Image 1 (cartoon, rainbow, N blue to C red):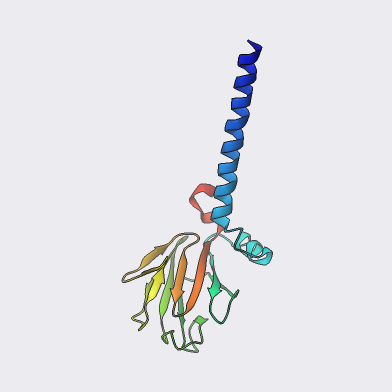
Image 2 (tube, helix red, strand yellow; image 1 turned 60 degrees about the vertical axis):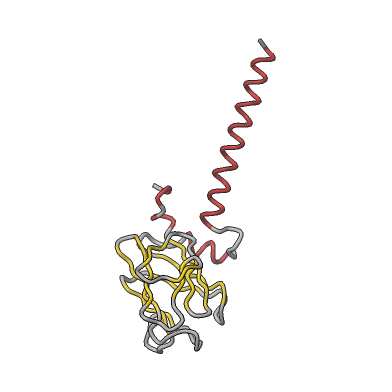
Length: 154
């Protein structure tokens, strides 16, 4: 009887440890904790509901952060756009980031070099998931939604 109870207790401990590991790993993946600096992690955690953040992962502005908190945000090379990307690989008005409630999407605005989401050239408006990689010209961004707006954060 004692041996059976010890086996059951060890199994319970192992199941809890595995479940905790999965939860911790899932949280790390969702927050991209291995990718972000402490400042970037704090910026993502501080996002209010209905906002998102683009973090530059490749390009001249490496590490720059752009807040998406309007219904429409235009990225391009024209000086009057919301996200100015100074490089010849970027069209004057290259891409539009759109917000509808707490959901975000991106669409190409007829650029020469195209807009890519997770490595695929987009032809239509594409919904952005937390952690998505968006490429505009030679600039690569990681998209972070507000932690309050993630489905499993209810």
